[in-house]
Length: 301
Image (cartoon, rainbow, N blue to C red):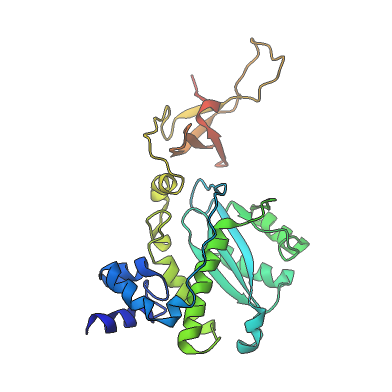
């Protein structure tokens, strides 16, 4: 098989990690030089017609302190394609902010019960401590509120214009791949290729942290944190995992020096993150987690 045939086979297989993506991804999947891959892709309409337009400006980072600590969720509007796919009008998407593990589910409407059924199904295999969405009524309703309360999940939204920025970037990647498949097959049907494309995304090395999302484990969290949030200088930890500590109380203007400045309750250090200053995830003795900065804790003496 020559290089051209090899590249075509890898690029047009939705299940493969090099499929319907960019130069770097296909180069890694094929083992061929980027120059060869770039030359091949420049002649493929499925790539050149859907090359993304870049609008670059700095944004505040969305920070997660662990896998399944923060998810983002949204609905992708695909109503224009619904007549081709039995009335499925939206995709409900969910992404884990740290690992970048993506889930997507086609839905025919955005009623509370429809969305709740999918979340309930997802929560049987995994769940997050926090879920961020926009303020749409499909997420803010009595049904979802009860479901999140049942699973002890904190649901919130932000006022930022970009809302769920990590997920929006994943949407762009998924849309690009889907429309390349549409161009290749001359068809807007996607139900048969949606999960293979999602699987391909989750098993491809993510350039933001250098891991394939499907392979990320809890042990990888410190490395992911360092990669995602550009921690370059060495961080010195004053405390270690399993140390027992107290948390400083909120300071008051006229606080007397002889009054206790620390909590009576003690906590055990559960995880370390190399921020500046260092961040510690603590657990109380019931297992509840608390995230604090180094300067707010002291070793129990």
